[in-house]
Length: 222
Ligand SMILES: *Cc1c(COP(=O)(O)O)cnc(C)c1O
Image 1 (cartoon, rainbow, N blue to C red):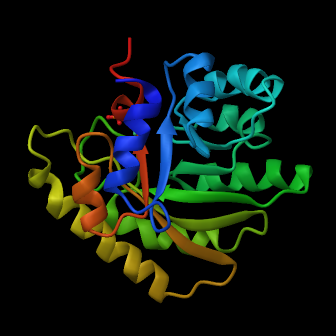
Image 2: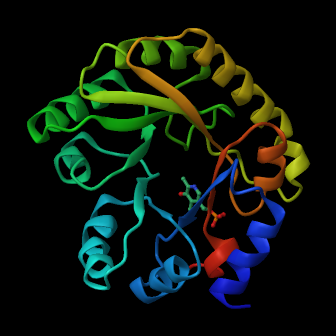
């Protein structure tokens, strides 16, 4: 199926007035991205700053606009390059990183929207805060003038049967509700970013309102 057909199929399954679809374009060409944007995609997700930087001018040159989401781990030494371009950074996992973003955003006169990445399945190989650290980190971020916390993100472990990870999504939704309930000043808690190609329907059933889909749109990556 073509990229446009894949997008059409996904958007018949999800209510895009309630759930934001981010097309994960990592390792995919600029021409595929252009196809996706032409087919109605309004937000793209990259997991490497370098790739986002290199594709951005080509998308602009094509006369297209899209939101740029940084969904991969962000090293502090890449913050200076990431902040000017990123509409939403999904992967905040330390106070140190948030403070660095605040400094760079302040210089640009920008308030950077971010999500806290929570490592809910507690897998050693993945980034993100431990679940118990998420709310304390949220409180720290709420003190930063040039960073605006907008919610939470998680990457569930890959399982053949997405039902297996339903409890992970339930747990993150609960944490998201707690975070909202804190009513922290200077935050705008509205995104729960969870669900990928294999598990997005389960994630949405459990309260996700932002899904990040790569393979389901572009086919398998090289
Ligand atoms: C690659 C990636 C995705 C998309 O994964 P698919 O299974 O291809 O849909 C989503 N989120 C993050 C953080 C990723 O790195």
